[in-house]
Image (cartoon, rainbow, N blue to C red; front, side, top):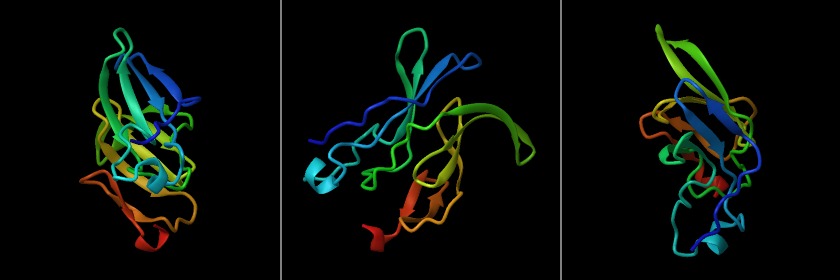
Amino acid sequence: MGGGGSTWDGITYDPQTNLVYVGVGNGSPWNPLLRSPKGGENLYSVSIVALDADTGELKWHYQEIPEEQWDFDATAQILVADLEINGELKHVLMHATKSGYFYLVDAANGKLLGAKNFVASNWTNGYDLTTGRPKLNPEAM
């Protein structure tokens, strides 16, 4: 059993979707071998979690780094915007975190639309936009 991630910042309300977006920190202890010796992704840690503002019901989540082990929490401020992407207007979340990546997420369903590093990164070789998962660098594990 692993320790869950905490929240302390990165909480945003969106009146257009009536969702509250919460950035969640990394699991504790940070070392996944100690936190979850049997493995596992530590669901909801290092994630954006979307909750219905009226009921608190979980609507979706996007886990930026499953089984995270580098103290790259996801608690940075979450910005909401309407952006044109490939000629189509999208309602999105923008999230730049300690991982060194700038995430673009669909505000309605949590689908990863883009992930671009804004500083040099050695823990990953980018993101698979089909799965939404990082392409982890085996040498960083």
